[in-house]
Length: 115
Length: 112
Image (cartoon, rainbow over all chains, first blue to last red):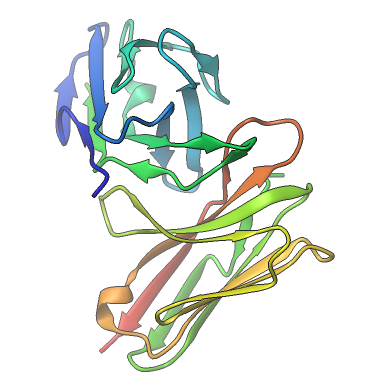
């Protein structure tokens, strides 16, 4: 089975702290994604990566950065956490074949609270 | 407005009944996917239907796709309490966004 793991299920940080969210997948997928999910707003794409050291901005990249040094690992970084970044963060991975996106496999999510 | 909009936003039915959820989208797509999310968890892929397919089945799930109307439906037959979850459609647009675009979901509650 495909497995996508996230470093923490719950995280509490203080305003201004630098926060790292880690995501690891074990299926050799090219593509990895970071979303945030908020009530009434659905899933919004923050960043995605289609290869090692490659990254693309999603819909809401402001206040975030990412790192993909190895194929299996995709990190989301909050440079200076703010209260409006309190949210559920979901990581996903997928294959990209013949110009189409296939199913995405999601991690369990990290519920981040910024105080 | 957002590509991939589910309808209704919430649905409550009795166990054993069928549940139907709809998804509308705006641009041409390669495929459309349905996902389930149990409360506080990640999303789980249910089924993918390609743009040249009209209907697909997987167990108690039946998905239809009407590209002329830019709409899809997900039918869950003989619902069970364990089907209680949020259901999302996601589209893979042919042009423009190189990403899946998710709707805001339908919250399904199965009452025992």
